[in-house]
Length: 450
Ligand SMILES: NC(=O)c1ccc[n+]([C@@H]2O[C@H](COP(=O)([O-])OP(=O)(O)OC[C@H]3O[C@@H](n4cnc5c(N)ncnc54)[C@H](O)[C@@H]3O)[C@@H](O)[C@H]2O)c1
Ligand SMILES: CC1=C(/C=C/C(C)=C\C=C\C(C)=C\C=O)C(C)(C)CCC1
Image (cartoon, rainbow, N blue to C red):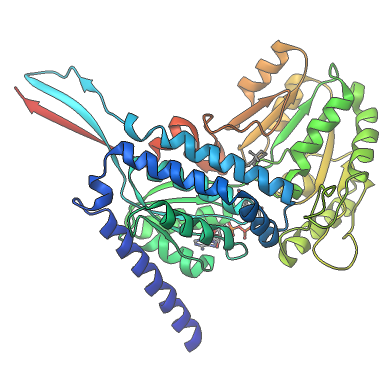
């Protein structure tokens, strides 16, 4: 008990130090606050350039830490650089407006950085998440204290070193590895932090809201879990649909907040789709993340392996038809056989819970109206997809599905310019695009008597 208390106090002390550094860097006359917006942008671009210089090293470290394939990790580094570059361009374009108010006043708004930001990120995209969190925060002139996931702290620490090399003033960027309830909890409760940005499970998202309510009502943005539906109509090319659905569900070993993990297939092509989806999953090369031909590496750790296997067992028990996979692959490491279930019903656990593993659940539907209702029958609302050649069907679905991103005839169509975030219990606020910038700004109204 005594050693637990000492550990918690130690985390509190570390968070206090990081917050003090971030606060000092945010002082009115600090180097960071008095720097021109264009120079801020140059620093962000320099960081992006250093990441490009070290991209192979960063990707290798990410792959070692997380288990994702080296190829995917390189892709993540590339996208992260793009996000930094996109927001670097915003630094000198953040402005308010003038307002024709009543009376003899000239009224204007000014957009200001929210202040010291606590950022708590998960293990599935360790480096990508740092870029998504830092780029808008730094572009607006905030200072940050970031806690990486305890499973994957390495690339965030290297990015901190690159930020130092780029020339960010002391205290602007702070990385504090640690556990969730202790280090993360201390960030959430800290009175010196003005905003917390979190990505992770909906369960912890709830705890963040509680902590914020109990402390200083920080600004909050949350990017949480999902159980995203991909709906496939029978006017599509089945082979292409199988490929898109595979990418939607299995990319990053299924460890993806927006994974298309409920695959709804219209009755006319259902049997053919199931057969081909199972063949595709069966052909997946699972193994060494550094091997050129590997498509799927291990899950992140024992806990996630156990969780995925438990959910696969629930699918078998509750009567879904196992088409392929269904077991751990080998008996070393955290590998899972790519798994496909057909005849899945909406009330089965595998159709309701976020699995975060390589498990595809295929459900049959007949009509658009029916599938819209079923797609929306979830507490989540992060993403959704639809495959059809009928524009009216696509638009009707896109307008009716309650999700933050809808991908038509594609999936995971991310771009730095396009806002991303959840409806319902998938989150609060948006990342990326101009909307993502707003999450780090306070709006001030100034009225001048004339
Ligand atoms: N939406 C996503 O991007 C995402 C990412 C990872 C995991 N998940 C889901 O969450 C489940 C659990 O995974 P996980 O344990 O990595 O996610 P998590 O939500 O527990 O952890 C995410 C981050 O929050 C921190 N954290 C945990 N408890 C905290 C607390 N009380 N206060 C403050 N910070 C805290 C963690 O240390 C980590 O940095 C997964 O099975 C998956 O379903 C979702
Ligand atoms: C998620 C995909 C990509 C990468 C995203 C990155 C680098 C970070 C964000 C991850 C999120 C939102 C995770 C949620 O769990 C690519 C752009 C590489 C494309 C595939 C999907």
